[in-house]
Length: 418
Image (cartoon, rainbow, N blue to C red):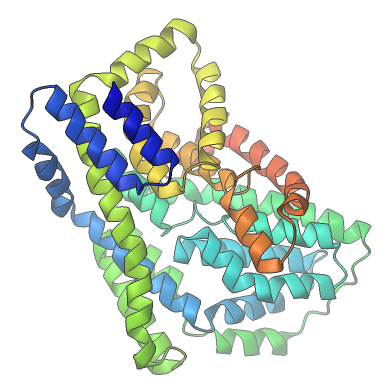
């Protein structure tokens, strides 16, 4: 009993998560009389996951685009194409943030990279300050359901679910979030009497020529995967190579001397994910050996007989979890416990993945400790309490979408052919 309490105290005091997880696995196996060398074998299992190579490749490509002029080109293209609509700049904000987060897989990167472009643009067009702050803060994590976002891949690895189907399953829920938030932005624009911009074919043409090398990327990745021409690992390699050539040798916005630092920062994130994942595999194996998931299911079943009640409580739990843990840690720690419980309630693992990630996405923005709130507070030099209030309408809309995703599985599963 003393060691678990010490590990809990270490976690509270800020010890690295992978150390706490690995130590708990070592203690569990030792207490159960199992040779602790099994932990090393479990960690080594990640080498046998061929799909795991997609994480460093997609992450590197995302960081490389973040260092280049891609965010600005995406913004200009979206404004030229959509700026004429009522509330056009808000539609641009939602669309660009979702696309950029999907490519980088990191919410904070989107707020930092695009915030300096979008926030002044919203204020310049006379959008209310509170609305503008809330829009940038909450849409910073909007693209986590769109392929090839890293959390989708990591969930597939941990849950041993089809990543191709997860990619397809996230598209409709992600689009629904973008559409409803854009509709709210249009409503705000009409109330604030924001003037419309004139559509210009010449401006659209210039923007398309400027972003000519970025435009093929989604078709290259998704088209290659779903046409059967690429495996997902091959698509990741093609993406990383394509982005490297475009940003370093064609646009020349990332000089060769800067490439090592971009690699180092992107691989630092990947290293953290892999270390946590390896330690978690060992911990998960111990929990399965001890039948912890089934014991948890029996406890849950004694109090909750309805699948729909379970889903509601699951959403509440995941929202709380999302504002306390980063999404990568949450996936590797919680998903192995949730999967067998959800399966016993007849919940499809692909559907569970979309519910899980949608809640984690909102958790980034949920007071009091949602990570996006603090990143935006630092980025815009505003009190975090002000961002709490600014984010509320956006969070309520996203919660509505989560309820629809939860209770209408067809939203997620139709495109995935399930």
